[in-house]
Amino acid sequence: MKKNNQFVLATLLAGLTCFATSPAQALTEKEVSSITQSIKDAPVADLPAKAAEMVTQSAKKEKQAVAVAVVRAAIAKKAASAVSVVSSVVKAAPFTAPAVAAAAAKLAPDQLEAIATAAALAAPDLADKIVAAITDVYPKAEERVAKAVMLAVPQAQAKIRQRTSGNAEAGIGESYSRSPTKVDGSSFPGTPPPAAYGGPGQDPGHN
Image (cartoon, rainbow, N blue to C red; front, side, top):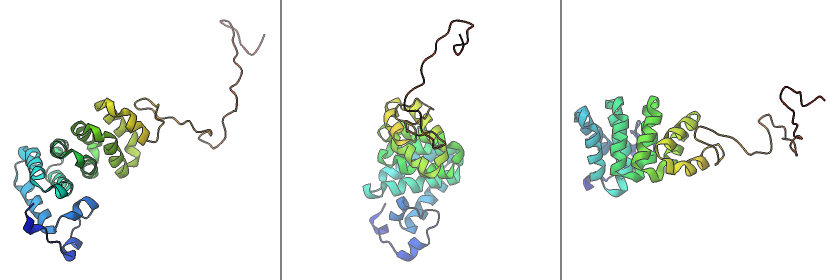
């Protein structure tokens, strides 16, 4: 963004509503309006390229804020562009992936898995953080989002499992606990029950 847009007024920041979350607070209202207008003026087919261009041209310290603002504006213009825009923006600035994925997911909840997958494919090293960021927005979607990302980025499975509520050894789509207590709070038996064997057709509990 241009240097003459760096001046931040508290009164202008107070007027930010849609962009008042943490990543976008580095931008002035004038900058946010400029981003929104640029996205509005772009043809729908050009949204991914335009979004990536704006992020690439922004100052390093503003890239995440610009990325989030661009993605929000693009989804507001055309919700169906969410996945392609997220992919392009994250490729342009991979470190923005968690914030971008969370922002997109919030505006397009019907595309959670696709958004998470697109972001993870563009920034595979941050796959686990992408899952965590989306889960912060939609806790109940943790398992399905994690499964989608693990299928898309297999090398991230271990990190994702460690971040999710399931055990690190759980398979894709699985979650189980090694807690000493059962779900109802009671304890598991200290020793396993004795094995019983029986021949075909026999009841092992009776002779």
